[in-house]
Amino acid sequence: MNTKEMIAAIQAGALDENLKRVYVNDSAVELQKPRYIETLNAFGELFGWDREVKIMSAPGRTEICGNHTDHNNGKVLAASINLDAIAVVSENDENIIRVKSKGHRMNVVNLDNLEPDEAKYGDSTTLVQGVARGIKNLGFTVKGFDACTTSDVMGGSGLSSSAAFEVLLGTIMSYMYNDGKIDPVDIAKVAQFAENVFFGKPCGLLDQMASSVGTFVTIDFESTENPVVKKVDFDFASSGHSLCIVDTHGNHSDLTDDYAAVRGEMEAVANALGKSVLRELTYEEFFAAIPELTDKVNDRAILRAIHFFNENKRVDTAVECLENGDFDGFKQVILDSGHSSYMLNQNVYSPKNPTEQKLSLALAVSKEMLDGKGAWRVHGGGFAGTIQAFVPNDMLDEYKKNIESIFGEGSCHVLIIRPVGGTQII
Image 1 (cartoon, rainbow, N blue to C red):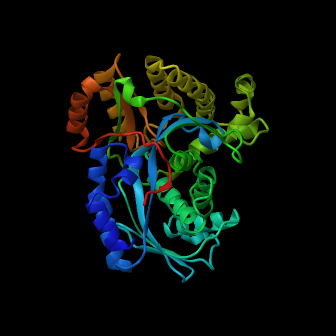
Image 2: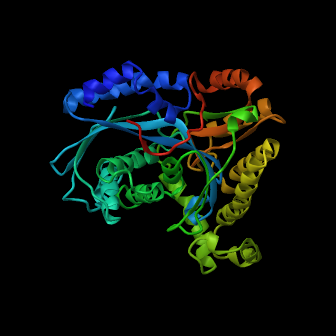
Image 3: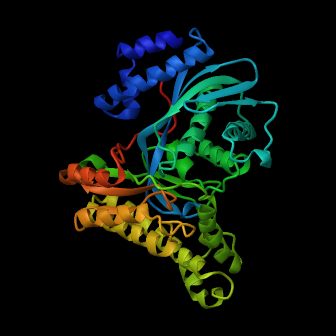
């Protein structure tokens, strides 16, 4: 279909089943339609109404357990969510990729120039370059295309807006020129490669993997070349709880060093014991070596290593609880994870700005309301941004009202767990 035909089909409800496969229920589909039509209109105005188009989607993700473990080859439990990045895309024969994201300047990449450039670190165009280069490195076809994208994954929310964008690019390249045959795990690795090598951000693989693979997944990164990805069979809707992400609207400026220090300090502990990452050590080896470590690394690094080892155990316990239908046990794991992140991993506020503690405030308020009933923890990278809360359904309205009275209307997001990762929708 061309752009105008696609708009007409969406308006007529002819594509509702395509959308429902991703957004789960009828009400969510109806909410998505204006967004899709707006993006199609943007594409038509910019690139032409008669172009044959496809629509792709890649979700944000929520980290359920496994806070700051992936970058040291640890374990995580995550889920894809209904907030996503979408693209209206059409082939071109110019060997050029053009991506116009809503609210941003156009990214233009000549496919003859796919080399990283440190002078361009932090520029979103480098993500397009990096994904294209990564797909080529895998031996797949990469050709030119034009795309308009939009995202409702809030930036800085811990829901991984950048990973959704990277996975969206990989999904486009998979379906446009490779018949959708690029494995989601490979797309996630390519997305991480783009962010590490081209964008200059030392991220782990969790965000990209959860976005690309989709649904509830547990991922063991002991081998980063071949991570073990397992779907977790759990019907969250039957738990009697809602999953809330609270955006505290904290200041995200200049946090790259804070994120990098978590990984760097964990690796410093591993290096001091002759290893590259903490996963190469057993907990017993690490704990026995703490006396000698105190002269080699800083104290916070040791605390963060303790968090790493115990957080890996908590992921296993959380998965076991979900698979056995023990939601009370699962909530206790979430509380333990949050406590460890606060006390040991220390990623609830930035030491560069210790008087700004919006995450701490959100966690404290959540405890006052949910103690003995729900669960709460820092979400994602931390230092600013969001917390996660599992709220009993009969308390949801009260929780949302009280939280939004502090952090503003719309700050409490009630999420749906999405059943698919990066995909072609239409």
